[in-house]
Image (cartoon, rainbow, N blue to C red; front, top):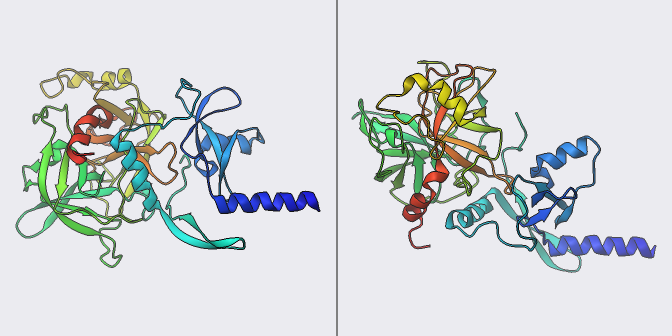
Length: 378
């Protein structure tokens, strides 16, 4: 009975304390570098458990949720605990991730009610737009539509990514169109463009368009820019910024593109937000694909430091017209309900061609420029 009593008290203490080592560095039993993460967000540990391998390192608990040492590709360089990054974009990522939780208060026998965070996440990070599937509602709360006006109506012909309360990341070639002129509006919180009764979508005016200073149309380099909105957005589970990458390399073999673009080459645009899982292509593979396109628009070929390629080696999957400016994203390494936008949809060939990747602007290459504009005094 004494042993049972002690165990129960330990569990009570964990529940009340609610402390964990989430987000801190750790080392797995095999000596690999890792990040302490909720077990639900760590695919390698989940796969081990399915194979009945249960010797993973436990960092701590968040309530009764186990925090485990999730392996990463980053080598162990410092044995002591330290923050992953102090960049403003990394700190803002942590801040925005709080909007993926609802706060509730749980009764406590030993004292006042305890505040707990309950995830309102719309997706589970598991392996799974041309060849794509419908996204879930609130699965991509950072998705934006870019609108152009013809005098009588608004045409939502490009995509974007909300990265702060007042800025949307997109492609510089989406700033002006031959048919409708400059971009004027951003729509956030959208899912199905045919529905007007879901109550989450909001339209905001663009008050400043900021293409990268080295972008020169029709040259296909530095195809990235920022839209400043007329006001700061009230963040929620339905409208929440994506995170920005803290390293140049994409640490996964696949990434996810999302948008309302056409579902076939030169076809009709989708009304519902779509997603597609794409393979990452090496620079060599990508340059081989575009070797016949070396001209004044792409005179240096695909540049690895500022561009990244994704498509499919085996299936007809791709982003397409209308997806321009939208995100190429991966699951965040420690925040189980957030994405990191690693690329901005830039250009490609005929959509969905097997072995022919689309080209995306590598976001990390422009991180310093983005931070100076979006968070100038922080």
